[in-house]
Image 1 (cartoon, rainbow, N blue to C red):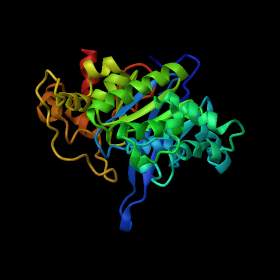
Image 2 (tube, rainbow, N blue to C red):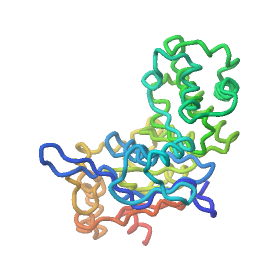
Image 3 (cartoon, rainbow, N blue to C red):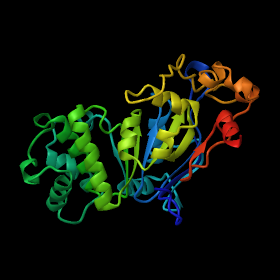
Image 4 (tube, rainbow, N blue to C red):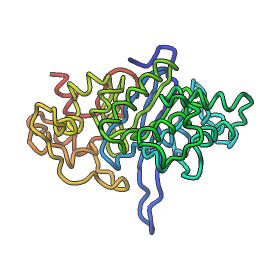
Length: 331
């Protein structure tokens, strides 16, 4: 699925998020010029190593972190940061966190956990019916059986379903799910992913799914955005990116999957400190193409070390920010 011609549901343009350095250190460029669109009814997977800026980007898209530069728009209107505007926006764009145990107050019943959003937003309708409907949509049936239970009385999969129900009860248009199945057993992960896909089909929901798991992206996403050191370095349809990756970083991530048919690429070292982003391509200090001499043979090694690849525009077509990949495409 590509971004619809009528325009994206959510759009980030030139987004920058910086965190101040400690003890006089330089600020960290955690999100550094990101362009990203999410279309209506589309699931986009945001993938990359831990520490690449995925969660910060997701939180900024929800208005939980205010960017230092760039803009965010929802249905074509710029996101405003007044308390009233953010409250209205967060009713339409909801966050689903990684750890359901940490998301749920152990002293609140399931009913109160799901009803919390309704109460914050002054829901004028039938609260009990809305809670029951949300729980039922999430596969907790009959919903009344779960009303008075506490989180410790539920399985991990049931707790995650309660968290999703708490987001759905406000009838949002967008879910931002940060590692939504990372804490679940393998047998339960598939059930929760199937639930998210069913909800997308039934409710025409859009979703940004933040994950380090490329297998999860394959199973749930329409489109993939690969993030490295604060930037989107490759984006496109899930099949296109995950079966024919063009960026060396994406290739390395895919090569270590159990089902990979290529030799594993072990990236050397940790990602650089975001307060000290390397010159040129920010991946060049770990790039297997540069280290293996292929960039030298292609005559682009100096460009990799000194010239920053162009920032991707975030739309639906497959794109890559890599001197080597673009050189190969031109030959």
